Length: 120
Image (tube, rainbow, N blue to C red):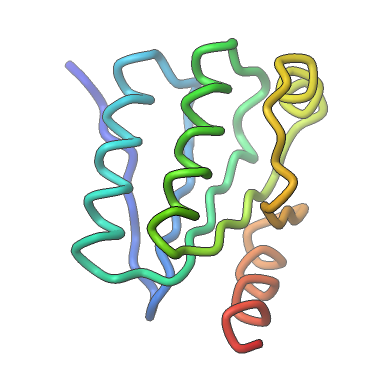
C-alpha cells in the first residue's frame, strides 16, 4: 500500500509535513500530488516541513530539488523547514542547490517568512 503525504491548504499557501522516511514511489506520488494541488488551488506559496526526516538518499534528494524547482516554475514561493544536519549534508554533497529557497528552523517560522515574502 502506497501512503500519500497530506497537503493542507491555508489561505493561498500549501503546507506539507513529511512525517516518515520516503520511498521512491511515495516521493514521486508526492511530487505529482503537490503540483496538481498547486494548479487546482492557485497556491502562491508552499511550506515543506522535513523535521522528522533524519536522512534522505540521492533519489529522494533529487525529487525534492525537482519539486522545489517545479513549484517555482508554477509561480509559488517555497520554504523548507526543519532540515536536519544529515539531510543538509546530503543535499550539498549531491549538488542540490536551494539558492532561491527560503529555509526556517520550524513550521511556524517558515509560515511567517512565507507570509512576509508574499506580502512584499
